[in-house]
Image (cartoon, rainbow, N blue to C red; front, side):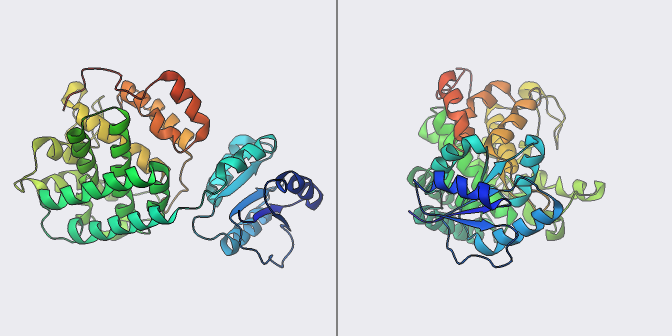
Amino acid sequence: MGELLLITDDIHRGRRLSRELGTRRPCHVHDLYDDALPVVDPSLIVSDVEALTSVAIVRLRRTLTQLRDEGVPYLFLVHGNAARSEAQAQVLGATATAGVSQMLGAVERLHGASIPVLARTRAAEARQFFQHALFSGRPITPASADAGTELVVNAVSDTGIYDWVRAVQKFDDATHQHCLLVAALAAAFSGALGLRPTDRHYLTRAALLHDVGKIHVPIEILNKPGRLTHSETAVMRTHAERGHAMLVGAGFDDRLLAAVRSHHEMIDGSGYPDGLRGWEVSDFVRLMTICDVYGALIERRPYRAPMHGAKAYTVLEEMAGRLDAVLVRAFQPIAAAFDPTMLKAAHDQALISCPRQTTTF
């Protein structure tokens, strides 16, 4: 069990908290305003900063940058305004937030939350395959797509969706990260729905290839650290049609081609590129789109921090009328993997099996 680092702006309060934490693991208390950083190698970091002034934020960011290694979880203790604290926690890259009274439970959940070696290894293998077989500019074949799909499905089975996603989130290339993340969500979602292995494979394969058209989008637009202009958005939106065009005639079935072309379609007709509406958007595409939207929300982007699981799921719920509300409810067990507070609700609603028998592919 590694050492816990508690960063505080009130050394007396910090020591009181450390006495509670110290019964569970060694705890080092660091004064935020001490310029000398501690010589520690923490396996978990907790910040207890009540006065989050601009100076405090700068100092906290500097301390985290120098002491937080890759994969080390960070718990942000909330004081005062919860909404403001949540925004600050996201900016700082917190793994989770909790009130002081919830601290012990949150620490227990994060205990041992560094990314396991197996998940890092499987993610690295998938990324290498993805770069060379699917995003190298060479023609994509069903055989190469199937190999990548099996790699993802097996990795999710071996490591679990949570550890896989956390490993993939460390990738610096946003497109590689997103496609592998959405493919994993699709594998987990189809498994939670109880779909047949062949349908699970189809959905995961479609998710793996859904953004392949982004190879034709300029890198300065893909990685822009801010909101896209109207003209840049128009260029970005071409990726669905261009990805579809890349795969037509290469031996892929109509379901996959439809998912690649239509994963930004919404059932109210507000999506693109074809403005499909209602049942023009198939169940297969609806499932894919939920995974795509949720994946985008929990990712770190150049212009924002990743959302926590519960908040991202709330966004899905708020998109009722655009996304299929029944399938969004069925997605809750997957979202719960990223936020333990959702587990009971997911269990209570018994959404592990498919909620309707009309889902067809």
